[in-house]
Image 1 (cartoon, rainbow, N blue to C red):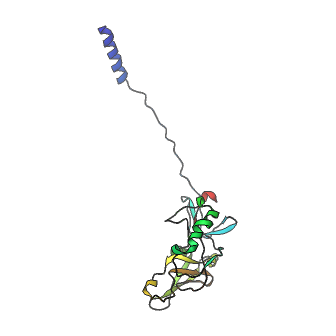
Image 2 (cartoon, helix red, strand yellow):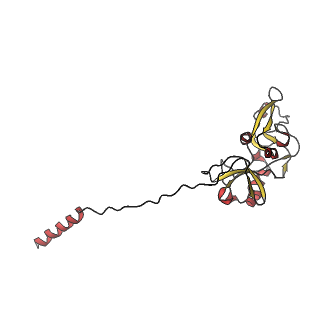
Image 3 (cartoon, rainbow, N blue to C red):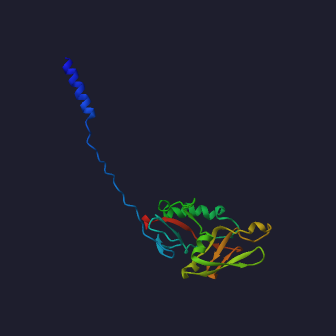
Length: 204
């Protein structure tokens, strides 16, 4: 009996102290995803409409930033910021649904918006054109001929409107009048707006 107990203890100790076979787990190495590269001025067709690339998009980016220069709706004036415009609701609702909300990517809070002055400055050459000690507009020199088709209110605030009195006609945001090569801080009457989207490359 004592022999059997001793043997069992020996076998148990031996089993627990014997070297175990090493198990190799081979991890799957995934190749980084790359996308098609797009450059400023490239044309992309969405729902039979031409959109222009306004920002270079590398192989590492899954979306491209586009503007529709053929958009025909207008607003009554440029004295309201984009976030307060009725057109913003149309952009983000009915219009974006036609494009496909799931085909766009939210960047800095927007899937669809207007162009910024900084983006426009990347595709043209802007020069300050002084009106007086406070007011100024910009004159525009094109780097690409197609840019003259951009005629739209921007997202970018006019940075001197708050210095003027309440009767001022100064716009709240800059207005690009591409066909006459100007960016204006004062534009009365009906003006154009052109949507900008961040479109996922997998749907192109």
